[in-house]
Length: 152
Image (tube, rainbow, N blue to C red; front, top):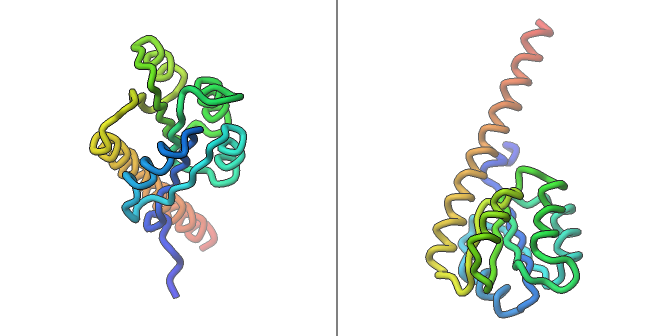
């Protein structure tokens, strides 16, 4: 039996929003088989989920009770720099968007957003994540081959 190729695995996505309607809408919009979608309505639960699952993509609402979206972004970036974090907000502000990008966010979506545009942006991030997975897998294979050659 062949081992499962990492690049064949679904890309993990965590969505953190305190509005259950938004969680359902994002999950419905993005459910396509390439994503393993997890949702949290609380920032702390979402952060624990991120630490445990190590998702490739995280969508977070900017305004959350307790930990705000910018603080959550900062904690996620400190936890794992390779995660593509997208902020969603009903308060469209070019200053906040710029600050979020400078802090490490991959993108910033004003609410309400077009499901098509969200899907397009996530598809690009998924393709990039799959490319990185394939590259990592190939790097691992190459390293094993180099080790085998050194033993000869």
